[in-house]
Length: 249
Image (cartoon, rainbow, N blue to C red):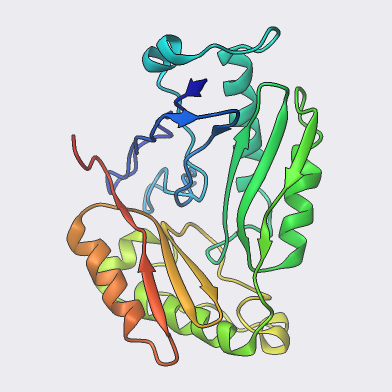
């Protein structure tokens, strides 16, 4: 049984747009994981941007491939998927240092996966998803990243290296602005009080290893983000998973 989930979530002023997922095989209908796509309130920032949950439905291919169980329809799965995405991306705990993706089974089970920089994000994601109509069960496999002062320093340094670089500032609504100091950040570091606003490039740090996830306009920007992250002291490795909008089209 296969189901392609590939719905375009919109375009931005920087032309961040649809990313095509591969056909999922087996029992689960998995949703592609990319960086956050969400609407911005101002015309001065990117309107709809990448987010760790890109969810798509290619109806033509799905109609040919789907052999869903009784009581399950493509429309129902799509409705649930849209609502799951909406609930997760609007969580106040979800930010630039997190990455969440999910899958949906024909029996209404939602599998949550990815990485959370704070434990509260994992529990909050499960709580909002299990209240969605049509969701029968939530299998929460989100990994809570280690609480590490060194990783916290790396998050702050990689964030500054990428988002303070003029050619990459178009990928955040905080253009040219440094994160404001706060009591929470002074006490617990940037992980405890991450920068707010839209960020097309998500920065996942685990034990000194950095993963970049998101959508950018071109290969040059993707490569530059990787180079900037690699130049940060104490970073052991950089896994650059940035995707290019409209690549291959």
